[in-house]
Length: 357
Image 1 (cartoon, rainbow, N blue to C red):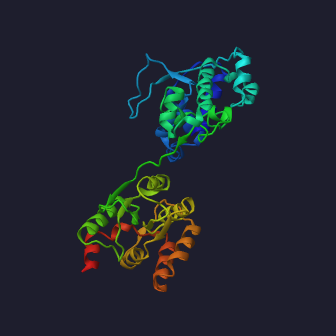
Image 2: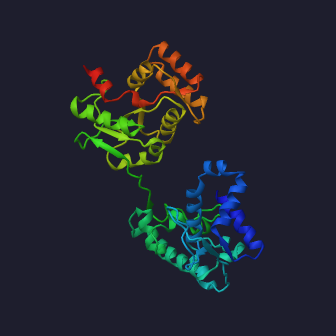
Image 3: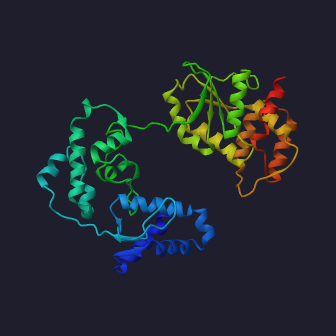
């Protein structure tokens, strides 16, 4: 989407168009994708909104205040102004030389368009921080962003679409670590048994299964022989990025986690990527739950548009085969080859209660 919109902006500049209609941009993008179906598959209007918002933050475009809103949610103005970047060669060369003990100005020599008054203001703030770095504390991305750029979302959204770099930090050769920025994992939803000494946990892919497990954990205690201190709602693929939040609530080197998700390529893929991304955490499949899920499946649940990845299946089978009999593996392979899946919601609260009796 970003490349398509960048092409539209370049066309406007070539034709000396200083303004554009949002409808014209959307029509251009739809045509570039070859139709509405492909446009929607690549994010549709939401992706357009996000890209326009970043261009606005980066100072490449601004909304025309007198224009109407488009009536969608989230809303955008219907008319936009393209901002021509004004460069100058007025940076104080003696200060540039002084700042060079901490910052690299070579990018600006090759790309003078970035030598603006605003850019220099940011550079000055960064330099002052770097000189006092040893006495400064580690803070969040948003906190440091507000301090240096007067905008808590600046470093989160600042992307230069033309060169693919992350913005001013890349232009200066500065990393987040040098600015003492600590990356906090986005908080996941979890249930805690009531202990601060968390050692055992279960990650559930889906919302309803999370609550069924929670009810059993509160009522009975164990789930297929495993007593969890916490239950984590993975929210599908979101857990792949939010798992780092575990560091905030326990010692990840001492915790044991079991994963239980849908029997399909997406569920298997989430598990494999978690294992690869967080090798320091002991994560295994909740094999007993998967055995019950596969055994209880008595009808076909079509895969739909979900794409299969045989590598995920092989990874899953390699781990679970030591804990289940061959008939389970055979049934799993038949389901896979029939382009079907098993939703984990089959193990609902009633089923879990029945197993415990």
